[in-house]
Image (cartoon, rainbow, N blue to C red; front, side, top):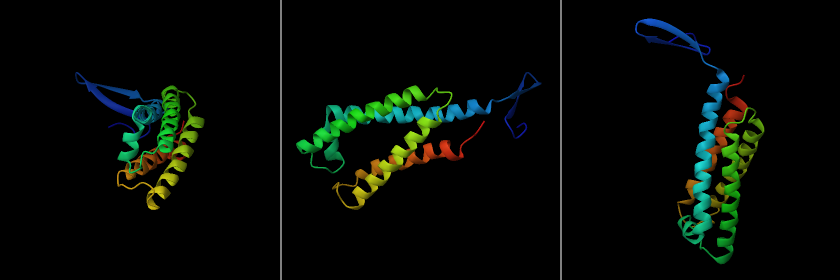
Length: 151
């Protein structure tokens, strides 16, 4: 491999070519991937909560009462917004405001979901899936906001 800071080395037909990699492009590609994964998961959960909320709620250990169904559908509507936000922010030149917003939202959702699971509000182990997803996304967005590659 080539030099440590932003360079790589390749050989084509025996000749050596050195190319500089744009560090911002590397940052965008990894953040872009996180945004795309977030978008896909947000849309999938949103569609499930909008079209079959009782089934999804029961999967996560809730009763599926009329109130829970309406709240599930409202959550699905909110997830549509998060999916659209991720879609348009994935190619943004200055994504830091969006990244901070998604970090804060996922961190708060992680704490709320964790407290609910620990208080045994959902009656099944499947609710841990949501806790883990919020933790992973909060960690991913925290990385890009506070410790990730800089210009």
